Image: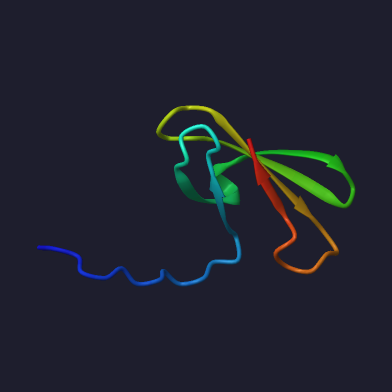
Length: 74
C-alpha cells in the first residue's frame, strides 16, 4: 500500500502543534499528554519531550487573546 496524498485530520481544539527547534520534528499533542505549569493568571505553559531527540519543548498559551497568538519554542 502507498499513500499518494495525506488528508487533514479533524480539528481538535485541545490539540497543539509544535516543532522541536533542535531536530525540526513537528509534534501534535493533547493537553492531557503534556506537563502543565502556570506562571501568570492569563497564561499557561505546556511542556512535552520531543520523541525523536528527547529535548523539552515549551508551549505558551495566553488566555483572552484571539486564536493563533500562542507561542511555541524550545
